[in-house]
Image (cartoon, rainbow over all chains, first blue to last red; front, side, top):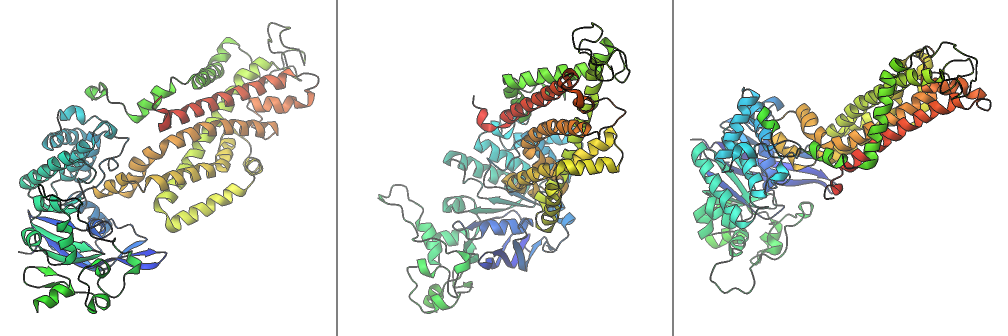
Length: 325
Length: 289
């Protein structure tokens, strides 16, 4: 069966004062029905751009989808007309944003906002939409939903607002739910609740979830499959178990090493030295070479590694490639 | 629906009103403006008389004849009658001009700020073109071109004063459209028109409301200025017309000029107080007090 959402060789560029930079460099990933795909990487790796591209929300100009294809259940989204895309957005594909504090319109009640999402896609009366909104608030675990529906966003806590965002996102039973760092702005106990809720929602609604995060803990809890991104490329892809147990790429290994282990006496938390290089300074070689502890091959600075399966799952690293030969 | 009215949650507008009604200067403004509006609306029921009719000897000082408490002008027309009937047109032109200003300014500013790119460029160049024209002169040209009437005067004032509103609206739109809830609105499939009017405009509204209020004051001054120059509607009594007609005799009789001048001053003053009060009410930094 063909995957529900399939991104093929997607290339997104942005015009900047440094010239045209490539934010996504022919990335491919897919997600099946009812599955959760985790997309991990540091800030600036292109995770959110991937999400926005899928929603057809790349700010243009300066952004541009230069190449590639995004197919939802066989339907090509790139180049689709804007009316069709509007129908899909919030209908078949929905998105949960990172900042629940700023993602809700401050001048309308949360109930009205969810009801608006419903009336945009379903032919129902305003009263009916509001009733549905209250039911959704109840579904996402908001106590006394009929009262809360009449609250303004500033009257709710961060966790509550993220629940509202989830209610809005699932209001039209999307096939694909993109969650862009849904818990980054929330404290740890609330994070766990939100993940539980996403899992429940997935069970009930059968939606595929694309979970964008930099938190490997979230990946281990939520994801079936994982795509690791670095500097606009997918550098490792595979099942969550396989990647968590046997990360191939030094970057993926680094990310997993960064997870502190309970009970182990660690004085300092591990980290990956350096930062993601600015996109306009990317050279010919592997984008990770500068920060990599195993960059002793000449190829590392002259040739971009390709995403190839080296036994466990595909990874894009010359070192891994050579040690498998 | 009645159940929703019982809701204790405070809408941003309600909260602004709560702050506004504790603002003493703003309330004074409301009182002054209310008195003036009531006087111009219903004053003629108490003091009947045609403002254009010559009823007495010219330049009768105020307080001498009980029938003409504010005296008479150079033709012997009652100043009180002029004050009461002249207020309506002045206020109406002010309000209409402000409305025209807001409609043109907000529409163009919103489109420019929202769409950016060449739309923004085009609209802003047009705005600048209108902005560099000397406003009063341009208004005079428009009024003389289309024979003076209340409507043409209101339109002329609107046409010369919208650029500032357009720029303010554009600036607010540029700020608000970058916020995450605008992207979130797109993500639920809202169309551009809906995002402009239902998502961005309500959030950009506070400074626009303040500016609309102040525009009323400016428009009233404008109307007075045009009437003073003799470009008002000659068939309609207005405060500006009274000042303009009597200005030559100000050394002989101060009252036919001073009273309408005072009325204009008080109206604009009251409107400004209200505008400042609204500004404070919408300013988040005032919320905590």
